[in-house]
Each structure stands twice: as structure tokens, then as C-alpha cells.
Amino acid sequence: MKINSAEFVLGAVNLRQLPKDGLSEVAFLGRSNVGKSSIINKLCNRKSLARPSSEPGKTREMNYYLINKEFYFVDLPGYGYARLPEQIRSSWGKLIEQYLKSREQLSLVLQLVDARHEPTELDMMMIGWLDYYEIPFLVALTKADKLPVSKMPRFVETAKETFTRFANCTGVLPFSSITGLGRNDVVKVIGEHLSKE
Ligand SMILES: Nc1nc2c(ncn2[C@@H]2O[C@H](COP(=O)(O)OP(=O)(O)O)[C@@H](O)[C@H]2O)c(=O)[nH]1
Ligand SMILES: [Mg+2]
Image 1 (cartoon, rainbow, N blue to C red):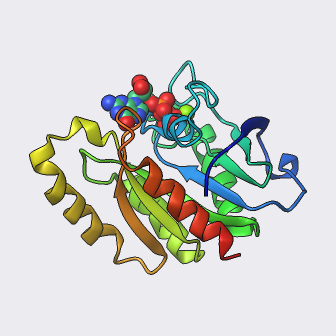
Image 2 (image 1 turned 90 degrees about the horizontal axis):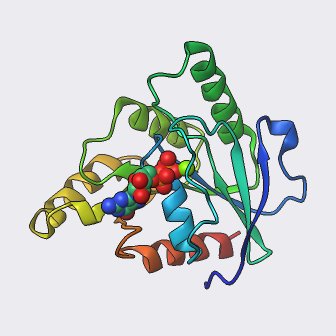
């Protein structure tokens, strides 16, 4: 698959506002600041399609991007921003869980985890949901350019051990929005996934 076109379509704050055209969706999930907007831009070869939020944790919207006029990338609101009031954190949780549980056109989730760190408790909770709702997910280890090259193989191996235990994990790939590492592999997995439907 090649990504030839990408356009912002809408930002939704509840499930009623989501597109009703039935097109397949690939959703990006991860804590705030993990690199969701950057990976979307890199995959689409665009500099500022997905705008980084001005304040971390402020984006409460599910942003929809139409790709190749055929399917959507969905930039889900980031989690784990500690300074948010409890009420907002719990409404965030409900929105995401409802989306994961009920969205039939959701084809694949890209779960983003910082390549340099152990997954957080919230990362593991998300992965638990994905597995429970039987949603296939690919783990992208972001900011891999910040890992010393000599450490990369071991970090990737450890991450594979952690994530491939889950039946619905389709793979683990290192990714860098700066060097483009993993970009073509991720596009390939997405393409293979969509063509299976
Ligand atoms: N070195 C490096 N920095 C990155 C990478 N991806 C994102 N960043 C930086 O991390 C910060 C958060 O990225 P952003 O895409 O806005 O994260 P989001 O909150 O998950 O959408 C920004 O300062 C990015 O420039 C990467 O692959 N390598
Ligand atoms: Mg973002």
C-alpha cells in the first residue's frame, strides 16, 4: 500500500459525532506526548497534518484523517496526563472504552509505547482492553532514535516478549518520526490488515 492522500475530516468529542460512512479505521493509542501526531504525519509524509496539541493532555478530541479516500486514521486522545482533573480522566476512559468496544469498522490499533521505557500501567491497561475486546493491535516503539544503536536489539526483544504474549498483538516494531525507521514496515502492516477485510 502507498499513502497518496491524507486530509483532516473532523474532531469528535463523543461517539455520535463519528463518521457514518462505514469506512475502515486504524486508530492510534498511547499516552500524551508519546508521538501519536508525529507518527501520523510521518506515515502520511506530511509535516503538520496532525498538529501537536499546544498543551499536553489538552486534546480531548478523536481526530479523523481520511487516507487515500478509502479509510481513516483516528488520532485518539492521549492518556496518562496526571494533571487532568479526575472527572475528565474518567470521561476519557469511558469514551475510549466505548469506542474500542463498539466500533465495528475499527480494523487495527497502533498502540504506541516509548521505546526507551517500560510500558506504563496505563499502557498495559490499554493493551488489556484491546486484547479483551479482540482488537488486533500493532505495537510501535516510538522515539527509537533516542535509543543507542547498541541497545536497540535488546530493547526490541524485551518489548516483543512483553507484548506478543497477547493473542491479538500482531507485532512489535521500532519507529522513529525523525529518521523514518519503521515507517515502511508500519504502512505495510496497515495495508495487509485492511486488505484482509
Ligand atoms: N526524537 C524524537 N522525538 C519525537 C519522535 N516522535 C515525537 N517526538 C517528539 O515528542 C513530542 C510529542 O510528540 P507528539 O507527536 O506531539 O505526541 P502526541 O502527544 O502523542 O501526539 C514532540 O516534541 C515531538 O517532536 C521521535 O520519533 N523521535
Ligand atoms: Mg497529538
